[in-house]
Each structure stands twice: as structure tokens, then as C-alpha cells.
Amino acid sequence: MPSLPDMTTPDVMALARDAAASQPHDPHLQDVDLKPAFFDWLCRMGDNTAILGHRISEWCGHGPVLEEDIALANTALDLIGHTQMWLGLAAEVEDAGRTADDLAFLRDAMKYRNVQLVELPNRDMAHTLMREFLFDAWHVEMLTALLQSGSPRVAEIAAKALKEVGYHVERSSDLVVRLGDGTDESHARMQDALDRLWPYAGELFLGDGVDAAVAKAGIAPAPGDLRAAWERTVDAVLDEATLRKPEGRFDVHRGGKQGRHTEHLGFILAEMQFLQRAYPGASW
Amino acid sequence: MADPATRPTVDQVWDWLADVPDPEIPVVSVSDLGIVREVRWDGDTLVVAVTPTYSGCPATAVIDMTIESHLREQGIGRLRLERRLSPPWTTDWITPAARDKLRAYGIAPPVDGTAAAGAAAGRAARLSGQGLSVACPRCGSADTERVSQFGSTPCKASYRCRDCLEPFDYFKCH
Ligand SMILES: [Zn+2]
Image (cartoon, rainbow over all chains, first blue to last red; front, side, top):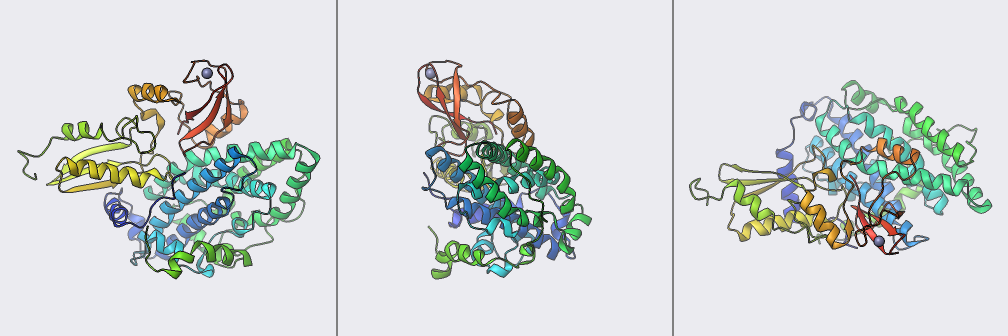
């Protein structure tokens, strides 16, 4: 399998800069008042896909069967590809000379803006797939809404990513059904995964001032607007999977979007950022 | 080179690009795949707009470098590659001739006109079982089954033929 996309060679960096010059005009990029919120919101999008992509990539070479190993590695690649687009745009909006790589590899945990759901450990296949399903079901609704974004730059990233996320949610929901409605062992593990992950899922739908600002600018929906569609998908899949939706609150654990994380994120970053921290500016 | 009277025409450049192989599926060229979206002269600089296939496709950077080195070998001095995201690449842009080349290479080409429309396609596939029928590139049988919707590269799914029993790659719709 080829290595990850080479993001640091001069050719590619030059390409990215040239690409920026040829993008569709987007007045939001020049809106100084909007800049802090727009930047933060783009980091949330890119950090969610970066951290989930990293978590899923941990399965590479360890999958229970070859097909699943390959599927997980490909899903991780898609998400890391989305990260390059979101953080690339974030860097452009910030306009402070940082690149997507700088944002991914040189920010500390408290500057990361992902929801806590995506940083939790994989534990087992059940947790991995249930977490991916809960995220995918949100991801599809978010990207679908962003097709209508008033920012053409955001809309074109969403259109690209949505093609891949359609495959992600198809696979993760199929597997939740197959394992939930499977053996006693697989059913018990899937229910356990759902019970543990449920209190983290709700953060995806909690809005704050950043969300309000980008919603007001017509860039993105308010997070809460996606909840009803997400619940319809989740309810239908859990029902088919013979799994019981937990009764407790689903938004107990929160704060990731504002930079408050579980102890797990630091360990991910320690591994993900090691090379750039130890050898600043190193490239392939 | 920059002199409009002597520089290569846009058509000439397209001809050259028809010989630039995709790094992962070398029987098809980058123009066969439909990922070269535009060729134009911007003053004395040749501009080639390229769209990525899959967002995380590791071949994307290699494709850019292959195009660049190929055009430099043809004597193009001033060259700029543009990355174009919109409209997003679709397998519907793969030329009919390239579909034949893929089949001869052992990869079932994407079923025509069925490019995934993201979530809608995922849900439709769930509702309708596996939906479309993919013919075996070796024996032509339509009696095939999907082993996994992910395969050896981001653009492929894994299939198996129930007649000749051979596994094969399917260039999945995007
Ligand atoms: Zn066959």
C-alpha cells in the first residue's frame, strides 16, 4: 500500500499556493469580523476528521479480517484527505502564514477543536464501528447541509467529501446491523459500545457563539438543526440491529469543540506530532 | 517557448496528457480518467487544472508530479498546476475507451451513469440490497458478489465471480 499523501515537498506546497489563487471568489475569506469564528469552525471540521482518521488508522495491519483492515485504512485515508481540505481552508482564512500541516502537527491539545467522541480509544471492533456510525450519521447530514453553504469554498469541499462519506455510512450502518443482530457475543459488545459512547454523541449538536456566527453568515447550519435527521437514521439502524437506545442524556460529555478534551487526545497528538516536534520542518 | 507563434497548442498538450499514465492503473491515462479538467495558456505560462479522484487518494501528489515531469520533458518551461475541487470528479467522466482498457486489465469499470450522490446513494444501496450488477472482467458473467466495498486502492471495491470463481477489483462509482 502506498504511503500517505506527501504534503510537505516543495512541489506540493507550491501547488497548494497556486491552487488557492485559482479558487472561486468567496467574500467570506475577506470578512475580518467573521475571521475568528470561521477559522475556529473550519478547525472543528478538520480536527474531527483528523482525529477520527487517526483513530481508525490505528487498525491498519490489525483488522480482524483482511477486507475490514482494508476498509478501515481506506476510510482513514478519506478522512485525512478531508482534513487537508478543511485545515487548508482554515489556514487560508487565518492568513497568518500557517499551512494545513502546521495546524495538524504543531497545535497542542487545548487548541484542538474536535468533539470528544472522536478521540476516545478504539477499545474493540464494536466500539470502533459504533463510534464511526454515530459520527458518519452526523457527517452525512452536516455535509449535505453544507452543499447549500453561502461560502462556495465550503460548499465545494462538502460536495467532494460527501461522495466518500456516503460509502462510510453505508458500511458502518450495515456492520452495526450485522453485529447488533448477530451472535450473543457480538450483540452484547455492540450494546456495551453504544451505552458507553452515547453520552458523547450529543456534543455534535451543541452550538456556541462560533456556530452562531457562521450560521448567521450563511456558511453552516446551526448544529441543533441536524439532530432530527440524525436521530431518524440512528433510530432506524439501531432498531434493525436489535439494539436498545440508552435512556440517559446523550450530551453529558462536552467541551471538545472549545478545546477541553479527555486525557486520550494528548496521547494521540504525542504519536501524530512526534516527527514534526522532534525534527521541525522534516519532509519526506 | 513563450512566443505564441511557437508554443504548443492546447490540443497538442492534450495529446501529450493522453500518454501520461495513472500511477496506480497504468493502462489508463490521466486524461482517460477525466481528472484533467482544463488546459490553457495564461500569458506565457501553461496552466493545467487537475481534480483529485478521492480526497485521500495517495496517488494525487504522484499524479501532479507525473504530469509536471511529462510536460517538462516536452519542453514546457513555465507550468502551473491548479487543483480544482469543483465540480467534484465523477467516474462518469471516464471515457468509453478507458472502460474497455480497464476491463482488459482485469478491473471491472464503473457501471455507467451511477456515480454516487453521497448520502442518497448510500441509503438507496441499503434499501435495495446491493443493487447494480457488476460483470466479471474475466468471463463476463453477471453472477458476481461484492466481498467488500473497499479494495486495494481508494477507488476500488472487491468482488468475486460466482461462475469462474476469480476475485476481481471493481472501479466503484464516485
Ligand atoms: Zn468470472
